[in-house]
Amino acid sequence: MKIKSILVSQPAPAVPEKSPFHEISTKYGAKITFRPFIRVQGVSLKEFRSQRTEILEHTAVIFTSRSTVDHFFRICEEARITVPETMKYLCNTEAIALYLQKYIVYRKRKISFANGTFANFMELILKHRDEKLLLTLSEPHKPELPMTMEKLKLDFHKVILSRTVSNDVSDLKPSDYDLMVFYSPSEIAALTAAFGTGNLPMIGTFGDGATRSAIEAGLTVQVMAPTPEAPSMTRAVDLFVGKINAGQTVEPVQVNTPRQSDEFIKAQEAKPAKKSRAKKPSSAASKSKSSASGKGAVRSVAARSAVKEVKKSV
Image (cartoon, rainbow, N blue to C red; front, side, top):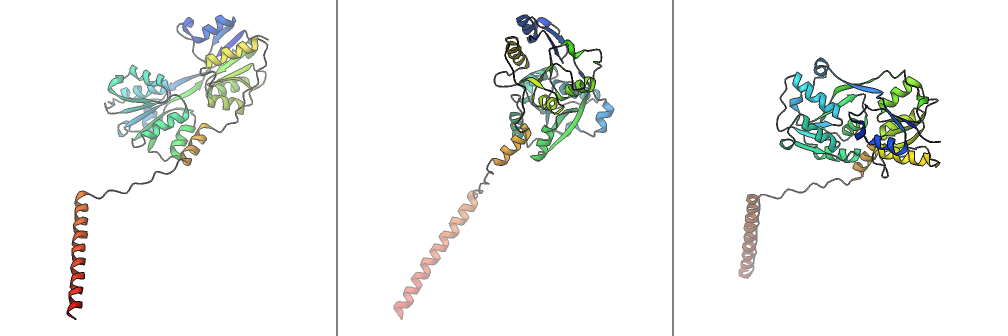
């Protein structure tokens, strides 16, 4: 068997030749079809206000996607909210941090970003636990992040800025493809809602959430990313197609590890509690104490001398 046709649940790139999937197409002679199973719609200003979120009461905003960045600044513009220069931004990837340049001057803002992993992102958030955090989300969203923040008792408020809606894909024929690639749990939900779980081609997934959603839905996942060997989806597909076309057997993906949020919370609980340092006495208090002890010593010596004099007289 050789893979000749791949469907990618993403919008078609503006310049197909610059897409990493174009290299796969050229390398293996496979046809790449881009067809997003979902689209993101921003909430209206009325819906935003119904959530009773006061942006200016927060000192740091958390972003996990470019779409939430877009809709955050759209809401600010529609509501005529001027975001202060002191606002901090915490992003789960460098790509999202750089995307902020579309709306703000990067160097004039305090922008921090993680390396894309859940644990690293949570470590970044914990470093800013003294801030008043605003967590921007799309609906539906992965529950791990807000759930972990709640368990760690962080001071934060979450706000829904967009919603994921399924596209009409009824005209598609899954049998026309040898491999279908998905990037989110919402895309997996749209796939199973439209075509069920039977008679589907091989499935590829990106991220722990999409992979778990696919397996829990009863789908067989043949390729996933990121992994140490394949940090990107295109790299994972490249390696997979090469093996399949060479006649090698590839075992289905198994997810036996705990959820990343559970692992992170256990790691935090395992850390030894920080010992509170005893406050050093102020210089004035030290002098007072030293003076008092000195006077006490003088009185003690005087008392002993008086006793000796009494004994001699007796």
